[in-house]
Length: 300
Image (tube, rainbow, N blue to C red):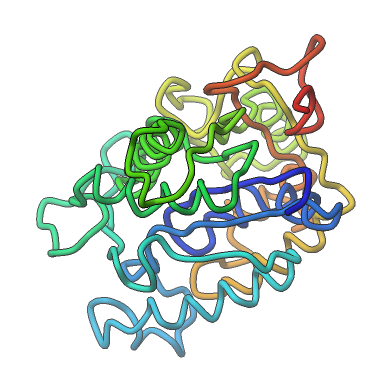
């Protein structure tokens, strides 16, 4: 048990790399205990590798098993050895999603049995409570109440993480699940709207009028991006971005490295992927003014 312990709750394999890859690599490299809980296997994900299209849910429906291997390789790249699925492999199925008229994710009209979105909240939280009580993290990272962009599994992961965070600290709640543990700080993933605007301005100045062309009209209250005043901490992962890139490559069925979303109109080594921001959701505030640079700042 190290003196710095971090727990991350994500919805699907690849979410951890895109949103928190350099953060995970940095703290693992520094000797902190980094624990990842993934809530589904991402069975409904789009397969971007033509030769693996047969694995998709609409065909053989074997994508989830394949994505476990991708996750293994991504965690090796990030240097993280403690990672598990909520309830075990395949306990909850990926819920899938649809894009709405505003370009945000929403719930499908027809839902399969056993999907994460339909899970009983208490039952799902009770699967996370013993992990919290066993690993005893000081810091919990998960999504905001909108799951970043509306994906139902991200929203459900947020709900489960927040409920389990509360239940795990109650001494009289389910003592059979372990001794109570109070997480000192809860953070929600964020992306700085100012940083993104700067990147878009650079693209426009270079003559690129297409990449992220819908960004200017995005509703900041319901989008990937957060105003700077909402952000509490930023991890500068420049030293670890190569490992994040390697982890992104490991999730080959989900991440197409030449897609404008990932290249942001430029090189794959964009500094956008080297910096990860988070909002303070609960627990002890960060000391000092401005954005903190350490998730554990001010914690004993």
